[in-house]
Image 1 (cartoon, rainbow, N blue to C red):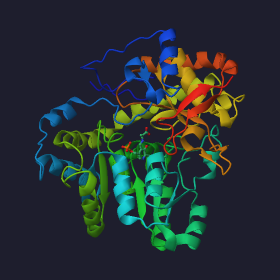
Image 2 (spheres, helix red, strand yellow):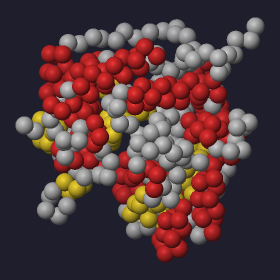
Image 3 (cartoon, protein in one colour):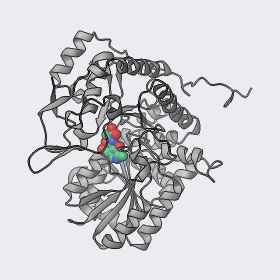
Image 4 (cartoon, helix red, strand yellow):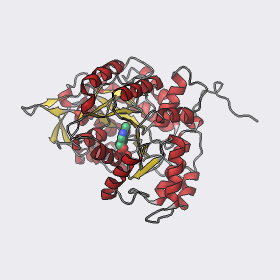
Amino acid sequence: MNVKMDGKMKTIIEPFRIKSVETLKQTTLEERKKYLTQAGLNTFLISSENVLIDLLTDSGTGAMSTEQWAAVMRGDESYAGSPSFYRFEKAVQDITGHNEVIPTHQGRACERILFTTLAKKGDFVVSNMLFDTTRANAQAAGCQVKDIPCPELASPMTPADFKGNIDLEKLESFLKENSEKTSFVVSTITNNSGGGQPVSMANLKATRELCTRYKVPLMIDACRFAENAIFIKRREKGYEDKTPTQIAREVFDLADVISISAKKDGMANMGGILAMKNPQWAQDCRNNLILTEGFPTYGGLSGRDLEAIAVGLYEALDEAYLNYRIRTAQYMGDQLMKADIPIVNPPGGHAIYIDAKGFLPHIPPQQFPGQSLVANLYQLAGIRAVEIGSVMFGSLDQSGAEVPHSQELVRLAFPRRTYTQAHFDYVIEALIELRKTSKSMKGVRFTYRPEVLRHFTARFEWVD
Ligand code: F0G
């Protein structure tokens, strides 16, 4: 019997069943207050044992399938020329169409290798929006970075189909002036720092055209290439009848270089993929890789990891899985909006982003409303989220005063295939509860402020 009842049944079911479970530890309010204080109000510094539902990131935190675990058993740990590498290489070539495939231990290693090998010091790296590690690696390689997101992104609550797009007019005028001094144009799909928003095929094609015209290479940061593909299928004319695999391939064809953190749509717990078409560039990158990652056929990974990724890349493109994935985010978004909780709308593929400025309008950006919301959510319900706002992206002016970021977001990221619908209902309930007491919530101030990537290790105290 055909049990496909799409459109008739409304209940979202996980398209998998559970074979192995991990017990979640319950904590009391008093315990959570203590853990939070010990962690300097920074949930990165809390032991994950004391977190009930961990939505800190969707990176490397997903559950692997039985097929992936079976593949792990095939892992060959030879230092050079492992068959696990060749299976990995074949899967990446098959899905991306790029022949030169370089494994790394994770996405940021791809970024470091790429920028230190192929970008010129003093040059620009221009993007719809760089993720924090991509930005930091471009800067560490001596580049200047520039984000030119589309104007729709500036209105978090106003829906638009492809808020991840780059602003093409601004890109063109920038390249007209600066193409000689631009090492890469980067399209981040989906735009993680900007709300997990997808980039349209039309925008990617137009970006490609500008890159060709102005002779600047296009890098696609494709961590969430499968989620971006399902959004194109759902929202862009002409793609309704294509499979996510076909759409992803059409996207990859546009790039000169692809960087993927396999911890996202690679469905693996560790790994990164650098893929490109130019053999000379690849050779230069491999020579750089050997310095820090290892031999080019393992690149910082075990054979077991390579096997898990080779299977996971295909599983990420499964349409039933992708439909469930984006419906979960949409469901949570709908429930929160019904309760007047301001979110980036529409929800992205891998996360819900709460607009902390709207949730806590009485807390000024200099007192980090996003960080306050993250700390309060953990304290109330044991849920861990992450601030994407002035803690992560703020800077200091010459007098040492904080210059806030344009957005104050809190991200609730969904590990892949890990939590059930009931877990998501619990998160919704917790946020609705929190909303009731939001007026009494306090801002926070730094007690330790690291100079770079400060959200990871910063410490805070409540502002009275
Ligand atoms: N690019 C994007 C768009 C990312 O979201 C990430 C990681 C990276 C690059 C770097 O990859 O972690 O494997 O080194 N994002 C994680 C997150 C950390 O929580 O969103 P990595």
